[in-house]
Length: 150
Image (cartoon, rainbow, N blue to C red; front, side):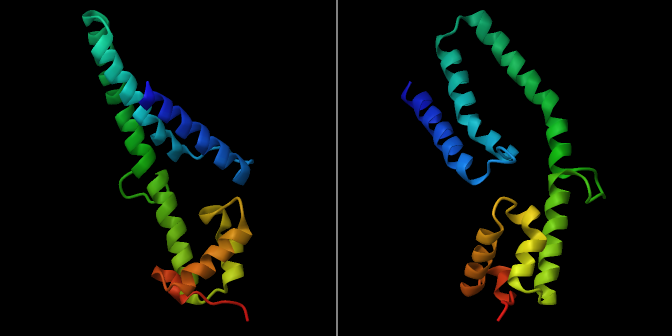
């Protein structure tokens, strides 16, 4: 019960914290991963306390569900072989390639934030620009090359 309560508090805290920063687009799909501990806890409680027959049905249903969803999940993550314009991987590779190219070309920080806000931080362009400055000042990764308007 304590673990389930902790999962509920975590979900509420994330929802509360995210509600103030991004009221337009809702929760990103990556937050679905945070429900996995609750699913695992439910499975183990069912495993410990359910009668044998329903327990077997739950195991079979969960296994079948995961087997059916695996190809769809793989497609959503990687897209199609040889095509970088499909799936989350393609979206990420394309976006980061454009960011790195603009860094290499010397595009100024505020212009970078305006160009790439939809990819990097769509809910707050000013915070994105400030974060880019912090990355440049700390000499982190490709942002060490970032130009600032003077």
